[in-house]
Structure formats: C-alpha cells, structure tokens
Length: 467
Image (cartoon, rainbow, N blue to C red; front, side):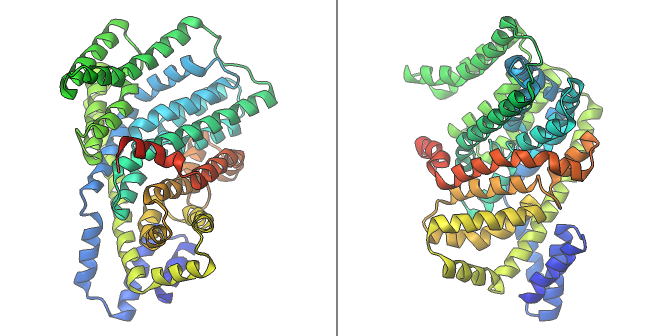
C-alpha cells in the first residue's frame, strides 16, 4: 500500500500527468508485489470503460463542441444581453445567465469557459471592465456547467456509485439555481461598489422579446402537461407542442428559442421515460446538428469535422483517465487502503454531519491536484461505503462531491478552468488565480447550503419520483 500511494504522490510532485502517475504507481506496485496476474489488470482496465453510461461522455462532449462551432454560443450571449444586460454590472450578469443556458447543452465547465468565455471576456474588456473581474466571473459561472443538467461528472459518479443518473440530473437543478442567485448577487455587489451601470440601455421592446422567448420555452412543457390532463397521450401532446414551437420560432424569427429548448428536451425526455441519460446525450448531439445544419445553417462540413476530431481527442484523454483510475482504485481496495481510511474516519467520528465536513475538506484538497474524472473514480469506492453506513443519500453526496471538484477546477496546480481562462484572457496564472479568489466566497456559501440542507438537492428527485 505504501509503494502504491507513495509512488503516486512522488510522480505527482514531479509534475507527471495524473493518469500517467496512476498507471506508473500501479505498475510498480504490481511488479514489486507480484501478487496480481497481468491478465487481471487488463480485465480491470477494460471493465473501467466497458459501461453503457460511459457512452454519454463522447456524445455530451460532441454536443458541446457542435454548439460552439454552430454559432449557438453567440446567440445565447445576445439573448442574455437582451434579458439582463441593462442591470448594474450588466455584462457580469450576462456572463452568468449565458452560462446557465449553455450548461443545459454542454455539461462541462471547460466547454463553457472555452466557448462562452472567449466571447464574454472580450466583450467585458471592450466595455471597460477590469480583466480580472471578467476572468473571475467567467470562472465562477463556468462551474455551473456540471451542476445543472446534463453533467459529465454526474454520469461518471452515477456509474461508479450505481445510482440513477437521471435522479442526479434532477438533483442538480435547485443547487444550480442557488449558485446562480449567489453569483448574480456577487456581481450586483461589485457593481454597486464600483458604481457600474448597465451596458445596454433599458429597452422594453428588447426585454419583451427576450422574455417572450423564455415564455415560449416554458410554454412547451406546460402545453404537454395541460393536454395530457384532457386525456391526450403524451406522445401526441409532445408532437403538437413541438409543432407549435417550430411555427412560433419561424413566424417570430426568435434568436435563441431553439437553443434554450435543449435542456427542456433533455430533462423532459428523461423524466417522461423516452430515453435514458445515455440516450439523452445522443439526443443532445442530434439537436445540435439540427440547429447548426437546418435551423441556423451555420455549420459546414469542415467545422463539423473539426468538432468531431476535437471530440475524439478529448474523449480519448477522459477514457484514459477513467481506465488508469479504475485500476488504481481497484488496487487501493484490494490492498485495504480504502478500508484503512474508512476505519480512520470512523475512529474520528460517526456523526454524518461531521463526516460531511471532513469529506468536503478531503475532496477539496484532492480536487486541487487530481482531474475531476480521476478524483470521482478514486474517491467513490473509498467514501461510498461510509456514505451508506452513515445514512447519507448517495445522490445528495454526488452533488456535494461534484461541487467540491468544480471548485478544485479553479485552483492551481491542476485547475483546468484556471489554465483555460489564463490563456483566453492572456493573464498570468498568478493574476488569474488572484482574480478568481473573491468568487470562491459565493461558491463556498453554496457548498455549505448544499451540504447541510439536503432537501435543496433531494426535493426535486423525490417530487418527480426519479429514485
């Protein structure tokens, strides 16, 4: 056990990529111990990626890439400007609202930061906002991606913890709303402190058009529900509502209604049992292709090929991490390292609230050093037995773990959002880190609420009967 963990930590200290460090530590342990046949290691590696839920990973990544190349990010940004750009600190509020919408399509913080972040930071700098403020709000809002459904970390966690991914998606809705509210209040505070006004003139027509788009999107599920009350089958009601939506979009020539429909289709489809979360990822790709090729006609074969190759590259790195982490986590379990940690924690406390505090600290520290997917793959087998033993709902714990790891994405030494935004904004990593620090306050406040008020996460899954 000492060789396994010690080698892993040593390789990490020397800057070896986390997946390579896990593979190297695992191989050295196997060579020294000689207790595990090579064929078993190969079987564990294959088992780590041979999972139907994992098929969602490449499709959600592809959906996010397609949304970027189809110009949908620009439409989302313009919609957010019309909706909240007139508020104090307008483009800061736009940044957050845009991330909320984009989160419903990409499911990843990095896609949000790289896609919308490029547009948002440039626009905020052009309007005179300090670069540090633009970077800070973009980084904080990017964490919404994996909290609001759909979410790649939820897919990995659901697979590892053997819980419903659909329930995890539902559980993220209200915490995502809490995070959004806290971030918007933070923007309002900075705007008042620095005497910033709105960035577009208040215009009833512009605001009315944006509000009408929201109303049309919300009317879609309401129409289906109303028709089913009168005995119309759900399938027929959906076809009628979708036809009405397409007609309204064609007649009024809305700028973002179809983009706003993505999360409604994904969550509604899973709730109504039309497709599983994995199939929802395929639906997201089909919807992105429909928008790019048919509705907006902004996608070409060249950009489509680029999105595909980018997806292959990203998926390969994610699945390599999953493979390496699955072997490493399995060895941690077989060497009783996981049991030793469990016994150590239980020796300190058997109170679930104290355990959640200790777990938060542990996951925050791990998230600063290890990739999100790898951290979930390693920590779930270790912490889940404790979670179940102490009577903590594993879906609630999935929200806690994911938010902790999202905060880790904003920290050196391995915070990927930190490095993406440093490159986009052309700031040093040090200045980018300092720009993000004030935004940790609303994130930590939201983490406390989500950790110690389980109903925030569990109310919607319980209401929808998704568990």
